[in-house]
Image 1 (cartoon, helix red, strand yellow):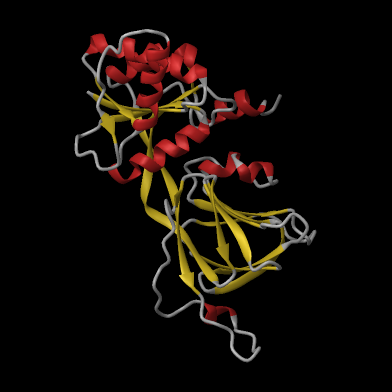
Image 2 (image 1 turned 120 degrees about the vertical axis):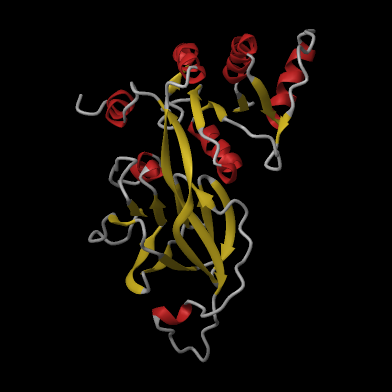
Length: 312
């Protein structure tokens, strides 16, 4: 069995858990690859403590050609999201061990990690697939002569997609204002049909997996991860009549943003970048999925009860 390990190198608890799991897996003949950041941190820590480096663990990179059975994400949900984007192109299942806070994705606690690893080595698990979003940035045709362009006309018939690094999202894609004192407007089309222009701080497009993340804090609904839906939740809407909306996940969204400064922020699972108003955003469900390692005793309902005190 070959496992690639990823971790939040900024936390002491993560490094301690990685070292413990490495010692646990070595007697079982597991081949280990480490992310570059994690391997460097382990080596620095061991050198500072005057310890000898036990093994020169090979690196995992997106270009790794070796067959990887599992990815181990040690940290919180942010670490899990980072891990997912590094292995999604290779369809590597991910097991998350929680050294963070809530842990909806990394939901195996450190005090239960040995038992779960034993079940993994014994192949007592299932693989659960989670849908992800894909975003493309397009160049919008200019509005000429001050004549308003009808919504469908701002979707180019042919275009050269602009480069967006890591355009996939397991949790959500958020369109957010850049300036504190001013709002933005987000024109939204659903399957080429005008839906609404959202006025406020922004708009969140969430997967069911991300329904308990930013979407939840913005007042959006919770969805079970297996639902075939997407969730649209406004952020600090300037209209009391605008509420979150649930749509089928095979629908396509096109978005155009207007801001006072001519620019706004887009956050893709927390990875933020600045875009300008002439950019049209196209969002749809990706053909790819993120694969999670699951065990019989794990359930979404139990997670709601333990993490959110659901019904208590």
